Length: 443
Ligand code: IFM
Image 1 (cartoon, rainbow, N blue to C red):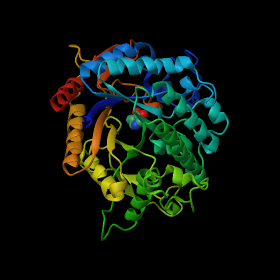
Image 2: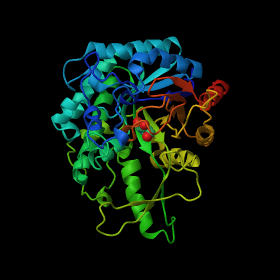
Image 3: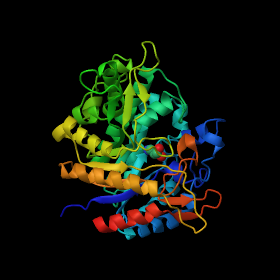
């Protein structure tokens, strides 16, 4: 019997849970970073977020009303292993145990992510992702989570968007842990993240479970066009494509890092004998998080980066200013197939969505027509890719409830459900009803 297509929504622990000091949870890098003055827009605090840690039953009811058959959430490493490595905190796992049972009771497949950027601060103090030991600590945490939930959860996502964590968190310093390393240091962080994925995948697979790696993908277009006349923009686009689309995928699907010379390094540091053998073939699925394509321009010699960014003309933008280009998702899915051929495992669109400044009207409705148009276009793009032979097995809207959008605080509302962060009142938006009807029609 073939498994049904997964229609779901996605969330992440730090963005929704709150309860940062409850039941034995220790601080993560995001607890510490977000407390720095200026780190989060308007000083918004993640302390309560959507209070999901206390209101999870209400949120599961929302999922039931939505009619989805899958829910992607993340497990907070600092709840489960507060010091990062070593003793497990049973109370931390109890929370996810209850959540998993509640989902299964409603025939909603749980799809947990083990790392969605909330590294235990204790590990950061020992060097964080610059240290190989962090990858081993991650695998040991993954094993502990799998031992507790693996009897009910068959498919796991190891890492969420390691590219964003490596670059925003370790190069640009605008996400936790707020480091600004040089290129080789960032590439070393990238390797340790991939090593962590490979080691955790081995733990999961040894228990008969599947391991999925979720990356953020973006089709890259040179501003000057391709082919004759594309010139330096094309070179810049290739460099950006290497960073964004290949760095965290080639090693898993081809067993080798791409040429990183255009990024300013001779090679990826920290790779030891056997690492790439472990990483190669370590994904039973690839998670595709897609928001928009990227238009790339060349930069002047001596500029900090080998690429710059340009606007995509003639398309609408979201509240975040991100261009809305649904066919970019079809293009990206097909590109992965062309690039990796039979090495490409099944794909899951593990995130897709948009932020708009939604407000509840006096009649209690949230008329988020732009979000409906965005999602309609992107679902059609997935379906078009599938018609052209792509093996896509799931689609997850980012996200269920408006939540803590990292350095943007509560400013970017991505949810199908509006959250009043002063009262925690949840109001399903018009897009909630639209997605409910779509899922009902497709299931
Ligand atoms: O909110 C984030 C999520 O944590 C990771 N992917 C992109 C989303 C929107 O920025």
